[in-house]
Each structure stands twice: as structure tokens, then as C-alpha cells.
Length: 444
Image 1 (cartoon, rainbow, N blue to C red):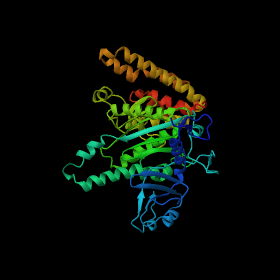
Image 2 (tube, rainbow, N blue to C red):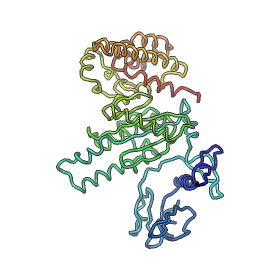
Image 3 (cartoon, one colour):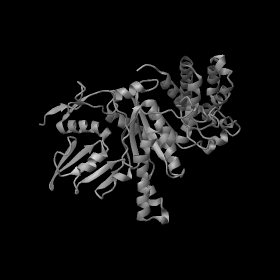
């Protein structure tokens, strides 16, 4: 039986693992600063290395922070991989090749001992929770492209050729391995022009959300952790950017799922929970997001100008109603149809105590609607639609009446008031209330 050792030397209560796992863990903490990798049969080129014993001999992989140092030390028959390097001067010989991968992370502020030197690793879950807005939780996001195999097998139609297939594969890789790094590091410069965001800075521009860690991203999927509110924003950024990247092609979409957990929650279980949320999004006809225990189309989360997300019979049922997209909010968004647009307005206009009261009433309304719908589910009559779309009106009127007059009488609140009463928005109350509650909670 192999001797077990502490996986993380800096945590007294760390789980135990085999020596190889512990070694890989320590190596992984160094990779944030790696900019070049040399594959060589030479020994002792650098103290940072990974050794493989093959039938053909021992092969070493050496890790360098400085690409120039790797190029100077590599022999003619060595392979030099430059990580996300766009400097053409480094590609002077055939032994050099680019290695693109999504490696965005923030350095940890916690110091640890590694080769007798204190060097920072990546941010840990406890740090993400501490940086989160509202409730102190870590967010875990999984996303992937819908029906990718069909896109590759049928999407090119009669134009199907190997070069075009390779080009399509390469473009997918560029998005997940190259572009996402830039989207995480430089949010404002890399969002599409017609984006929707929640966090804004003093200049009404997308607020930076740096507290993220790419666990993996490449091919057609990703798994990202970080401060929960920033991971939520990142999910919407990725979707909107991907739709722009694909020219809003109707058949090339993303689905995703997200979980929120305590900092001590096991990573493997968080991955499973986020995976279940993603599966629920796939089961919703794809092009959807599972978040806060709810599943909606991305257009429902983001808000759309036309309520095409409703079933045809529901649209016909609600035809006489005034649609919320006839109103225009402070940010130029047509109406408040959609979860994010509601949360954006309410988060800015309501104070913490007001938000808590508002959330309680909104959740109570959603709960009553859910219970009543269950009771008449089998009756298949318009009563179900009445409850789904109109039962909320008395409670919403009561909730609005209890808001301070400075909020009720603010002209900017008119669109919110009308949209809260609109039957088009009733199905989203639980998600709206949960989101606002998490943003305003100050307890761990």
C-alpha cells in the first residue's frame, strides 16, 4: 500500500492523497505563471519539470515563466510550446509551436512554501466567497455547445470538406481557448455592442469581474468557478459573445448550468450539481440556462423585445394585454421582460431593507401560484392560465403600496410598476426574488 501524504501542505485538515497526486497538485499551482514548456530528453534544464518514463526513454517537460529563457535553453531537437504567445519574433524556428488554452486565474493572496520560496498560487474558494457580493458563496458554471456533433456532421451540408471541417473545429477552439481569456481579463473591450449586464461602474460601463478561475475551457465546453455574482455575469457574457461570434446562427447555441455553494463544498460535488443544472437546461429545448433552481431560455433571462419565448397558445391568450416591451428603461432596454433586466433596475432602486421585504412578497406570490397550478394541473382549463398570469396582481399591488413614496413616485419606477403587473413577467418572479435576495444578504 502506497504511503499517503497531505494534498495541500498549507491546510492542516487537507485530504490525504498519493505522492503523485500531491506532486501534481503542487505543480498545478505553478502553472499560472507558465508561459513556455520545453519537451526534452535532457536532464536538469529547470527545477520546474514533469517526468515521463516511456519505452523509448525518459521525457521531461520543463516549465518557464520567460519564453526567451525557454528558447535559449532548448536544444535543436527539443519541442518548445509557447503558451498563448502572439509575439511573432518567438516563432523563428520549426521547433516552436503555439499552445493555446484558457488559463485565466487570479493570483492568491495566501502565501505557501514551495521550493523554499513563498509564491502565490491561484485564488482559492475561500477567497472567492470573501469577494462575492451579498451572500458569501462560490459559483460553479458549466456550459457547452448544443448539438455540436450535428453541427459538424450536417451543418456544412453540401459544402462539407475536410478543410472546412477543420476550420470550423479551429474556430470553436479559438473561442473557448483564446477569446475567453480576453473576455475574462478585459470585459468592457470584449463584449458585443448590444450586450446586457448587471454590474456597472461609475461610468455606466460593464464593471470588471476579475474573481474567476478557469478549471477548464476548450473544444466546446467550459467549467469555471469564482465569486458567485461574477460567475453569473460571466455566464451571460459568454452566451452573448458566443451568439455574436456565430453571427446569431439559429442552430448554434449554448446551454449552461450553475450551482452556488459554500467555500468548503467539495469541488467534485459542485461540478456534479452544475452538471445537473446544465442537463435541465438541455431538457428545456436547449439554448437555456439553469440557475437559482430555475430553467429559462437565455432570451427569458436576458429580456427580449418580442415575447416569442411564450408558447403560441399563451401568446394568443395574452394578446389583449399591454406588452412590457412598449416601455423603455434607463438603460435603453425595451421594457423589463426578462429576469436580468428586472434585477438590474430593482437592485439599483431599492435599499437593502426594502429589497428584503420586496423579495419576501415576490417569493410568497410565486409560491402561491405554484401551489394553485399543481391543484388544477389536470383540469386543462384556462383557470391554470389565470393563476399563472394573473393571481399575482393583488399581492404585487400590495407590495408596491408598501414601498417608500420616493421609490413609488420616481418617474423611473413607472416601467417597473407596469412590468411587475404585467402577466408576461409573472413566471419569472421566483428567479428575480432569489437573485435580489442573494445580492442583498450579508450573512455567510
